[in-house]
Length: 144
Image (cartoon, rainbow, N blue to C red):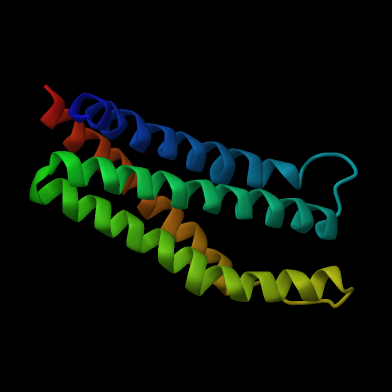
């Protein structure tokens, strides 16, 4: 069991990091540049993609917490993991609801102003990327 948990500690932070980088910093901005993509269509796609991403992130966080409970990664590992999970919880529970309300208004045909909350989500994505890199490094050090 320890060996599996050790591999999970190595693999999951990098998988999570790759997903966030690919979706938040590649797919999300590029989708609005594609021919024929309107703002409502892009918002509809984005809502679906980010709902799926956040669901997978929650699963990865739980798997990583279980692995860390088995192996006890030390104070630095726990702090990085718990701060990363806190960032995710804030994104899902605090920031996404107003973003969803705004996109509902746009999809209903309203001319809603740009959301400042979106900038908070992006800022937390940048923080999460840094945390996941640091977490991967700390957990890899316990492996060697």
